Length: 118
Image 1 (cartoon, rainbow, N blue to C red):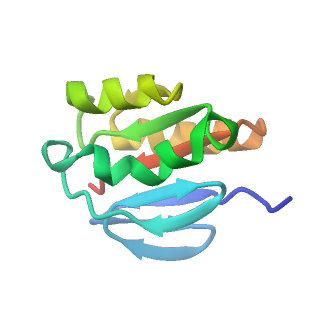
Image 2: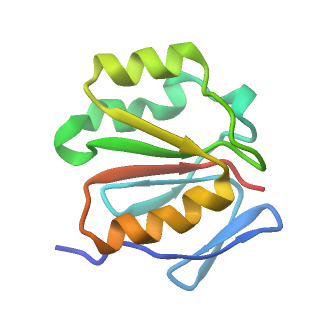
């Protein structure tokens, strides 16, 4: 089992993940950080989370969604698509979600993290 990545820093348009700077938004699925082409909550679509949906609840019980500088309700289509896939959704500001990611990862939880860069 691989070590879950830690989010060491955030801001200035990106994230430092396990010591490596990653510009732009971030998706961590099955402990693998990848670039995520979502610049704002308004630009979030079901297709942007398709990899999470396709992996199903065995890989990710829920998605931890960082919505940007402020907490905001994700679009209805996102909530409905995740519900249909039996994947939960927790959303909060990106700052809070980055901190929460580390707590949940240290507990060994199965989840995906999707963070809009701030």
